Amino acid sequence: MKIEAVDFFYLSMPEVRNVGDGSQDALLVRVQAGGCSGWGECEAAPLVSIASWVCPMSHSACKPIRDSVLGQRLEAVDDVRRINALVRQNSLDLLQTDHTLSGIDVAMWDLLAKKQEMPVYRLLGYPRAYPKTPYASQLFGDDPAETHRRAGEVRRAGFTAAKFGWGPFGRGSVRADDDQVQAAREGLGDDAVLLVDVGTVWGDNVAAARLRLPALRRCRVGWLEEPFVSGALASYRALAAEAGAIRLAGGEGCRNFHEGRAMVDHAALGCLQIDAGRVGGITTAKDLADYARGHDVRFVNHTFTTSLALSASLQPFAGIETDDLCEYPVAVSSLAAEMTTTRLVPGPDGRITLPDAPGLGIEPDTRAIRKYLVDVHIELAGKTLYRSPTVE
Image (cartoon, rainbow, N blue to C red; front, top):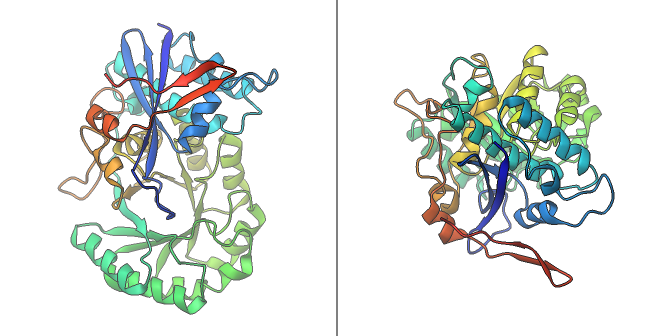
């Protein structure tokens, strides 16, 4: 079978607020081949990603992504890898390539697994998917009282692990950050796993990060996520040498295998966090899960949007029993909550188990797509390059 069509659905909340909530818009991707459809999701600015699909060729290494995808044979795993590599080769100088490719790659895995009537994780070579312990992922409150309330809510909901991130943390005084972490710990209770994500707030400033270590130790924080930008390898390594039992986590900003490998090799990470919607899809995420496992680094998914993206992010390490923690967004927008016909939710044991259904086991809800669809029309020199697809 050959890829006959690739459609992008730009979805958005009516109002997108200036907060660290990546669920306020989404870019769904549908790949059609051989009478079957596969779905994926990009973790990126939707309009720019659509433009990279249709933009005119600038030169031999700056081609529109569609030139490397449409009409390609898609019958086996090797075809997914071949198309993935071809896109990177032909669109090397398009800065949005990796993000757009990610959604397409996920959709190809979904489609191929459906055709072969098996879950994606089995197509990846895993005989089974091990349950994962979800950590409730959410933002810090505007003040410690709000953080304490949110922590109490997720604990009462049954979560035994939680992560707080972004918000005001790292942007004010050391004392203010101390109060936030203490509020999170008190709200969760002594026996819960507490994780902290600062969203690269310190750039590469080790001194600023160092000042927060005492509070993190006192509150028994399991990891400090993204204290620095993904490429600040020396800063990561320097802080890790001082952090002791507090592991450093990072990698969600990686756009390809080489960037992820560099984080494993040179950043002294305890946890490698990879987003299948950014890194080049399930293909690259699986390669990095294997690499991290071989270097005694824990692999953890990154996702903060829909159940479709969550399922895609879990597939690459589904069969690794020792990597048993997964990100689980608990405060997503109505768009993300409504976007699929079913949602991945913790079971009676409090853990997340992937569906045994073919493909990702998660399907978009066409009613929600219609509700949140943004009408996009890209025209160049009087010629239409892209128009939002109809929802069937």
